[in-house]
Image (cartoon, rainbow, N blue to C red):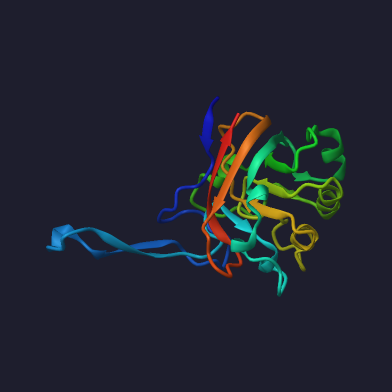
Length: 207
C-alpha cells in the first residue's frame, strides 16, 4: 500500500500566511568551527507549514494541541477530489462521497500554489455552510491543501469558529498534489507543545 508524506518541508522562503513569522534555522554549534557536533536553532510559528489548528487557536479555554485525542489524529479517512472548484460549499459536499469517514482531506487546485514560494489570496477554501455540514456529519478532522481553510480576508473567521467550536481539528497546508482521491488511512502527528494553539505536523497518508 503506497505511503505518502504530505507534509511541507520546513525551509527558507517557504510560503507563509501574511503576517506569520518566517521559518529560520541558524547554526549554533558547528563542526566546521571546531565544535564536536552540529546543532541548530529553529525559529518558527506554531502554524508554520503543514500544521494543525486546535480549538484554542480561536477560543480561550479550548483544547490545546497537546490535548487532542490520539484517536482523532490517526485512523481511516478520505481524500475528496474538489479540483475544478473555486470554493467548497454545501452543494459540492452533498455531491461528494465522504464514505462516512470522520477524517476528511480536500484535494483542490491549490496544490501547485502550496509548493510555490509566494502566498496566493485566491486559494480554494471551505464555506461556512460546508463547515456546518461537516460538523453535522460527525467529522472530527478536516484538512485542506493550502495555508488556511478559510477564505482570505473572511472577517470573524466563521469557518474556523464553526469547526473548532465543535472540536473538529483543522489541518492546513496538506500537500495532496500526488495523492489519489479516495479512502485512505491518515496519520497526523503534530508536535506535542504543551498549551500550544497549534503545531507543525508530520502527516502521512496510506492508500
